[in-house]
Length: 231
Picture (cartoon, rainbow, N blue to C red):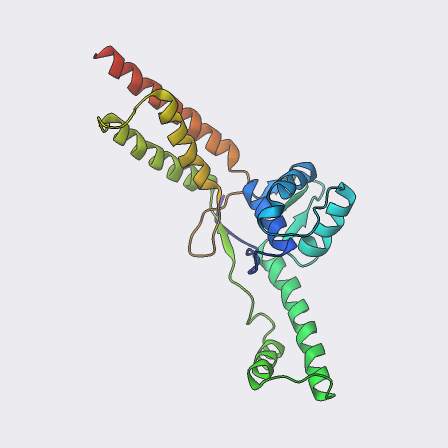
């Protein structure tokens, strides 16, 4: 699969749309409604002080108004691999977000002309810029990498960890439990996404990461066996 541009993360973290996007991001960018609901409740208090949407019906309405309608998410469509929600393409996001930005700017401009709104020269200049080009103030896309490239990065980092294991620090413990924890932390850190130019998100990546974990486990077992065998 080729690299694909997807909707950006919202700019402000203390918002419902950010929490929903962060929850979906944590789940690999493609999740069922139940999984997204559960993850949203888990991280809600990290960003918001308002009441959690415990009822699934309320949760669905929030996601629709905050993420699906504005172009951050795409909902399930028959014949697609989307479980319930996935990040929308950047093209879809731009179309919806630019239309919304133009509508808001035109409304504010009309209020200024009617004397109902006082605005600074900076604000007026920004409104003019958006009216002339509704995409001018939109954030850049994120890039979703191919499964092969993402898996390659995971395996390379795991291999680097194993190289350090082969030459352990005598002052540090090297038991199998600690090695496993270190490898799990390494793979968990692969789950986050950032804005361009980083390319760290992969929808459907979890099977690939699972494969990398298995490979890593086998390598650890092999190295451990050699270590004990040579003792």
